[in-house]
Amino acid sequence: MDAIEFIDSWAEKFNIDAPDGFPYDRYFGPESLDVIRAVAGIFSKKFRDAPLVPITLGMLAEAMRRGKWNTAEIEAASTHNREIK
Image 1 (cartoon, helix red, strand yellow):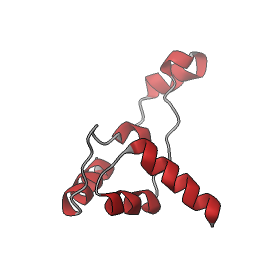
Image 2 (tube, helix red, strand yellow; image 1 turned 60 degrees about the horizontal axis):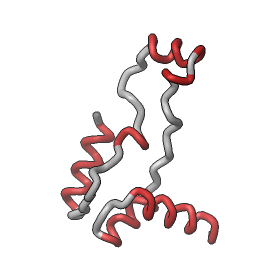
Image 3 (tube, one colour; image 1 turned 90 degrees about the vertical axis):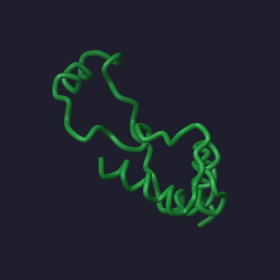
Image 4 (cartoon, one colour; image 1 turned 180 degrees about the vertical axis):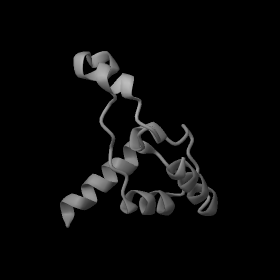
């Protein structure tokens, strides 16, 4: 919940538009551990969650520069900037 509240406050403060909504579940896992789902994931891919993508300050800064959050563009710009350094 803290991560969601942070992103919501950040987007409001910096007037970031997210046309498709912010993909919280792409970057932040569940707040509590779902034990049954975790154990089931050991035995079946159906219950495995997709790996989380790290969200960086650079991604937040890029969205602030653009004034909107577009997941594919932000992640591509972040990867490109890391390769340059």
